[in-house]
Length: 110
Image 1 (cartoon, rainbow, N blue to C red):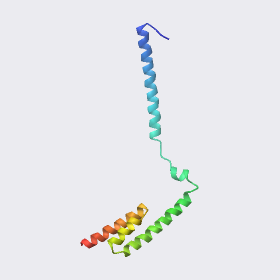
Image 2 (cartoon, helix red, strand yellow):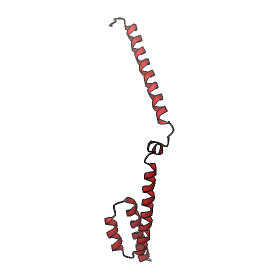
Image 3 (tube, helix red, strand yellow):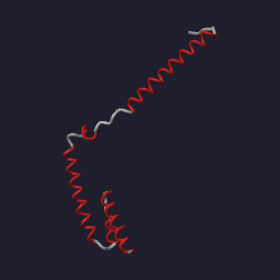
Image 4 (spheres, rainbow, N blue to C red):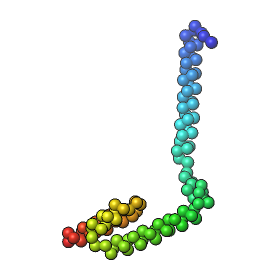
């Protein structure tokens, strides 16, 4: 509806602003409650069926990394380690190889 009374228009506009302010406050409260909601252990709860399998894969990976670590200790050439580094696919493998290269270089410097 339209009105020509300026005072009534002011009241309508202030009522609209008040409603918008209340809506913003409700939105902020909702966001705050979502933002500070405690984390649940989602990985284990959401993936209960695959958890034993993923644990088994992680154990296998740890065993492979241990074997690689022993193999790296036997290598005394930076060139060989560099070849292994280029062939490695996993981050953890590359990390171990880089550490072995740094160790060899430090021994060469000494």
